[in-house]
Length: 159
Image (cartoon, rainbow, N blue to C red; front, side, top):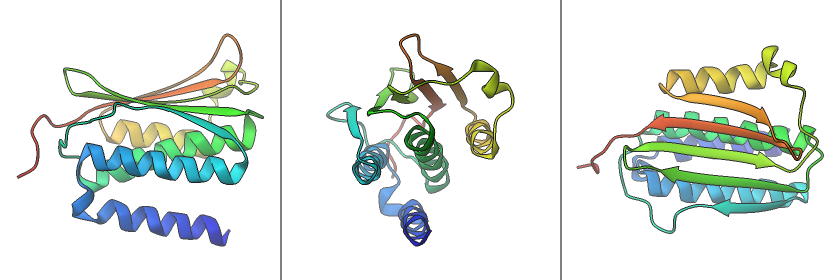
């Protein structure tokens, strides 16, 4: 519980620091935090992240909600999926649609479970909606679960 509390406080402090208000800094923090979490859980993680992302603005409240969505998806994979590998991918398309995917190779879930989400899934869905984005959760044909978050991000750098 103390470790979870410390991580939550660290995430909040990071999210409100205006020096981190860019997409590239967010993705760097996201991959670092995900790697630390999966290492502690004894799981492998694979990243599919562009080598260079633009320094487009990503204000603290957006970064915070996105981080919490991804953290919950990774946490669910660690707790429930009985997986060995978690994949995290990030894409920014030409229309500035940011897509983040968390995928595991675990046991998957019954699609009906998405119809009656628990508090964590409801929170993820609400955060995505608050960002004007979408969240989809789907079982994978070969097993595992895929969580996809997509939001539009601003087109111009800060300043």
